Image (cartoon, rainbow, N blue to C red; front, top):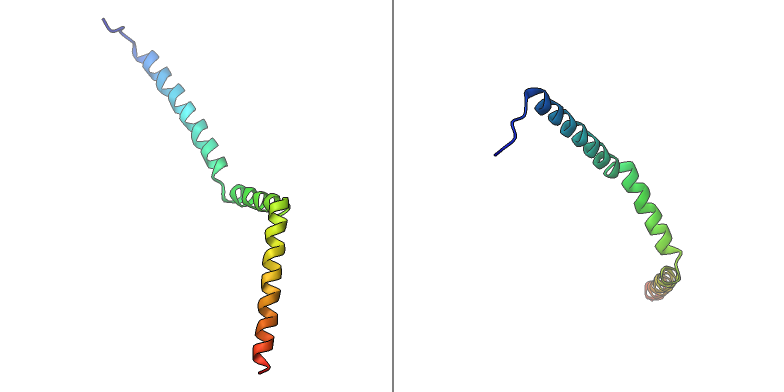
Length: 78
């Protein structure tokens, strides 16, 4: 048989659930704040760019761009 709850108990449970929901919403707002997301993205990119693999990729891209510039200069002089 279901326990009978009085109005005071129900109100207290609703208040507790409301408080928990407010905390959850605040935590989500903090996690999804645009400034925080940008900061985390910058940190992630910086970390990846300074890793050995990131430096190798940057060097390869730089070499490719230099090659393309030289090639375009040679073709423009003809």
